[in-house]
Image (cartoon, rainbow, N blue to C red; front, top):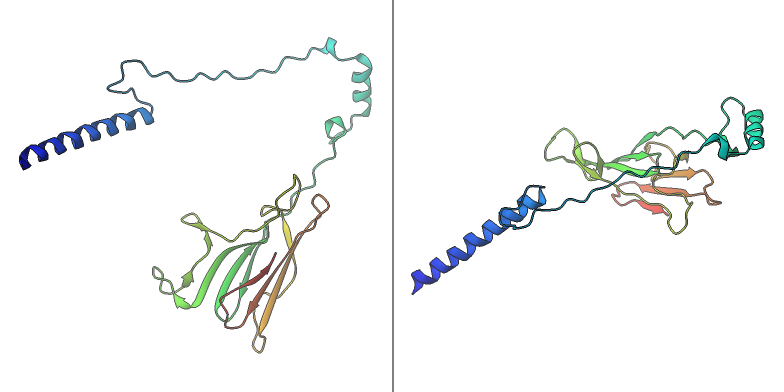
Length: 203
Protein backbone atom coordinates (compact mmCIF):
# COMPACT_ATOMS: atom_id res chain seq x y z
CA UNK A 1 0.00 0.00 0.00
CA UNK A 2 2.81 2.41 0.85
CA UNK A 3 4.53 1.69 -2.47
CA UNK A 4 1.33 2.57 -4.37
CA UNK A 5 0.95 5.86 -2.50
CA UNK A 6 4.60 6.69 -3.08
CA UNK A 7 4.22 5.95 -6.80
CA UNK A 8 1.09 8.12 -7.07
CA UNK A 9 2.84 11.00 -5.30
CA UNK A 10 5.84 10.71 -7.62
CA UNK A 11 3.54 10.79 -10.67
CA UNK A 12 1.76 13.92 -9.37
CA UNK A 13 5.07 15.59 -8.57
CA UNK A 14 6.53 14.75 -11.98
CA UNK A 15 3.43 16.02 -13.80
CA UNK A 16 3.51 19.26 -11.79
CA UNK A 17 7.15 19.80 -12.72
CA UNK A 18 6.33 19.29 -16.41
CA UNK A 19 3.49 21.83 -16.22
CA UNK A 20 5.71 24.34 -14.42
CA UNK A 21 8.41 23.91 -17.04
CA UNK A 22 5.84 24.40 -19.80
CA UNK A 23 4.57 27.63 -18.26
CA UNK A 24 8.14 28.83 -17.82
CA UNK A 25 8.68 28.34 -21.56
CA UNK A 26 5.53 30.37 -22.30
CA UNK A 27 6.69 33.10 -19.90
CA UNK A 28 10.00 33.37 -21.76
CA UNK A 29 8.24 33.74 -25.12
CA UNK A 30 8.59 30.17 -26.40
CA UNK A 31 5.80 27.99 -27.73
CA UNK A 32 3.81 26.01 -25.20
CA UNK A 33 4.48 22.27 -25.40
CA UNK A 34 0.97 21.16 -24.46
CA UNK A 35 -1.07 24.01 -25.94
CA UNK A 36 -3.36 23.07 -28.84
CA UNK A 37 -3.75 26.67 -30.05
CA UNK A 38 -0.84 28.83 -31.15
CA UNK A 39 0.06 31.58 -28.73
CA UNK A 40 -0.97 34.98 -30.03
CA UNK A 41 1.35 37.88 -29.51
CA UNK A 42 -0.13 41.38 -29.42
CA UNK A 43 0.79 43.60 -32.30
CA UNK A 44 1.53 47.22 -31.59
CA UNK A 45 1.25 49.75 -34.33
CA UNK A 46 3.27 52.94 -34.02
CA UNK A 47 1.17 56.05 -33.70
CA UNK A 48 1.68 58.51 -36.49
CA UNK A 49 0.84 62.15 -36.14
CA UNK A 50 -0.92 63.66 -39.15
CA UNK A 51 1.47 65.60 -41.31
CA UNK A 52 0.83 69.31 -41.14
CA UNK A 53 0.81 70.98 -44.51
CA UNK A 54 1.98 74.51 -45.06
CA UNK A 55 -1.43 75.42 -46.51
CA UNK A 56 -3.16 74.52 -43.23
CA UNK A 57 -1.26 77.28 -41.37
CA UNK A 58 -2.39 80.84 -41.93
CA UNK A 59 0.15 82.94 -43.79
CA UNK A 60 -0.11 85.71 -41.20
CA UNK A 61 0.92 83.31 -38.42
CA UNK A 62 3.94 82.14 -40.41
CA UNK A 63 5.01 85.71 -41.07
CA UNK A 64 4.65 86.68 -37.41
CA UNK A 65 6.63 83.66 -36.23
CA UNK A 66 9.40 84.29 -38.74
CA UNK A 67 9.65 87.96 -37.81
CA UNK A 68 9.83 87.30 -34.06
CA UNK A 69 12.23 84.38 -34.30
CA UNK A 70 15.63 85.02 -32.76
CA UNK A 71 18.61 82.68 -32.40
CA UNK A 72 18.30 80.57 -29.23
CA UNK A 73 14.67 81.49 -28.65
CA UNK A 74 12.23 78.77 -27.57
CA UNK A 75 9.34 78.28 -30.06
CA UNK A 76 5.83 79.16 -28.92
CA UNK A 77 6.98 81.80 -26.46
CA UNK A 78 7.69 79.19 -23.79
CA UNK A 79 10.24 80.25 -21.18
CA UNK A 80 13.62 78.61 -21.60
CA UNK A 81 14.48 76.11 -18.88
CA UNK A 82 17.12 77.18 -16.39
CA UNK A 83 20.29 75.09 -16.44
CA UNK A 84 20.25 72.37 -13.81
CA UNK A 85 22.58 72.74 -10.85
CA UNK A 86 25.55 70.41 -10.84
CA UNK A 87 25.45 67.54 -8.37
CA UNK A 88 27.81 67.64 -5.43
CA UNK A 89 28.77 65.00 -2.89
CA UNK A 90 29.26 66.42 0.61
CA UNK A 91 31.35 64.25 2.96
CA UNK A 92 30.86 64.88 6.69
CA UNK A 93 32.79 63.20 9.52
CA UNK A 94 32.02 62.93 13.21
CA UNK A 95 33.84 60.93 15.86
CA UNK A 96 31.76 57.82 15.05
CA UNK A 97 30.27 58.39 11.59
CA UNK A 98 31.45 59.10 8.07
CA UNK A 99 28.53 60.37 5.98
CA UNK A 100 28.09 61.35 2.34
CA UNK A 101 25.21 63.58 1.22
CA UNK A 102 24.10 64.18 -2.36
CA UNK A 103 23.05 67.72 -3.24
CA UNK A 104 20.33 66.18 -5.45
CA UNK A 105 17.50 66.16 -2.94
CA UNK A 106 19.86 66.54 0.03
CA UNK A 107 19.91 62.74 0.24
CA UNK A 108 22.08 60.69 2.59
CA UNK A 109 23.69 58.23 0.16
CA UNK A 110 26.50 56.69 2.23
CA UNK A 111 27.14 56.06 5.91
CA UNK A 112 30.00 54.20 7.58
CA UNK A 113 30.56 53.43 11.27
CA UNK A 114 34.13 54.50 11.93
CA UNK A 115 34.58 52.42 15.11
CA UNK A 116 33.23 49.17 13.61
CA UNK A 117 35.12 47.29 10.91
CA UNK A 118 33.44 46.24 7.71
CA UNK A 119 33.15 42.46 7.36
CA UNK A 120 34.51 42.44 3.80
CA UNK A 121 37.02 45.28 4.08
CA UNK A 122 38.73 45.26 7.46
CA UNK A 123 40.44 48.57 6.77
CA UNK A 124 37.16 50.47 6.41
CA UNK A 125 34.24 51.22 8.68
CA UNK A 126 31.05 49.19 8.57
CA UNK A 127 28.85 50.51 5.75
CA UNK A 128 25.09 50.79 6.32
CA UNK A 129 23.70 53.17 3.69
CA UNK A 130 25.25 53.06 0.24
CA UNK A 131 24.68 54.07 -3.39
CA UNK A 132 27.09 52.20 -5.61
CA UNK A 133 27.16 49.80 -8.53
CA UNK A 134 26.83 46.85 -6.16
CA UNK A 135 24.22 48.16 -3.74
CA UNK A 136 21.58 50.87 -3.42
CA UNK A 137 20.24 51.62 0.06
CA UNK A 138 19.59 55.30 0.78
CA UNK A 139 17.55 57.63 2.97
CA UNK A 140 15.44 59.85 0.70
CA UNK A 141 12.82 62.43 1.63
CA UNK A 142 10.76 64.96 -0.31
CA UNK A 143 7.34 66.52 -0.69
CA UNK A 144 4.33 64.97 -2.41
CA UNK A 145 0.73 66.00 -2.94
CA UNK A 146 0.96 68.51 -5.79
CA UNK A 147 2.18 68.57 -9.36
CA UNK A 148 5.13 70.86 -8.67
CA UNK A 149 6.86 70.52 -5.31
CA UNK A 150 10.47 69.89 -4.25
CA UNK A 151 11.17 66.15 -4.23
CA UNK A 152 14.13 63.84 -3.56
CA UNK A 153 15.36 64.72 -7.07
CA UNK A 154 15.32 68.51 -6.66
CA UNK A 155 18.80 70.14 -6.72
CA UNK A 156 19.72 71.61 -3.34
CA UNK A 157 22.58 73.68 -1.96
CA UNK A 158 24.42 73.31 1.35
CA UNK A 159 23.79 76.73 2.91
CA UNK A 160 25.06 76.07 6.43
CA UNK A 161 27.18 73.56 8.28
CA UNK A 162 30.75 72.45 8.69
CA UNK A 163 31.99 69.17 7.26
CA UNK A 164 33.78 67.85 10.34
CA UNK A 165 32.97 67.65 14.05
CA UNK A 166 35.93 69.38 15.65
CA UNK A 167 37.49 68.70 19.06
CA UNK A 168 35.41 70.24 21.83
CA UNK A 169 32.38 70.48 19.56
CA UNK A 170 29.37 68.40 20.64
CA UNK A 171 27.00 69.04 17.76
CA UNK A 172 27.16 69.56 14.01
CA UNK A 173 24.26 70.82 11.89
CA UNK A 174 23.89 70.70 8.11
CA UNK A 175 21.26 72.62 6.19
CA UNK A 176 20.33 71.94 2.55
CA UNK A 177 18.02 74.34 0.73
CA UNK A 178 16.23 74.05 -2.60
CA UNK A 179 15.17 76.76 -5.00
CA UNK A 180 11.54 77.88 -5.07
CA UNK A 181 9.47 75.14 -6.75
CA UNK A 182 5.75 75.77 -7.12
CA UNK A 183 5.93 78.50 -4.50
CA UNK A 184 7.54 76.15 -1.95
CA UNK A 185 11.15 76.09 -0.77
CA UNK A 186 12.35 72.86 0.86
CA UNK A 187 14.92 73.05 3.67
CA UNK A 188 16.49 69.88 5.08
CA UNK A 189 18.38 70.06 8.36
CA UNK A 190 20.56 67.23 9.69
CA UNK A 191 21.81 67.32 13.29
CA UNK A 192 24.76 65.12 14.27
CA UNK A 193 25.92 64.73 17.86
CA UNK A 194 29.18 63.49 19.33
CA UNK A 195 29.13 59.76 20.12
CA UNK A 196 25.65 59.34 18.59
CA UNK A 197 24.77 57.09 15.67
CA UNK A 198 21.26 58.47 15.25
CA UNK A 199 20.72 61.52 13.03
CA UNK A 200 18.01 64.07 13.74
CA UNK A 201 16.57 65.44 10.50
CA UNK A 202 13.83 67.81 9.37
CA UNK A 203 11.76 67.32 7.41
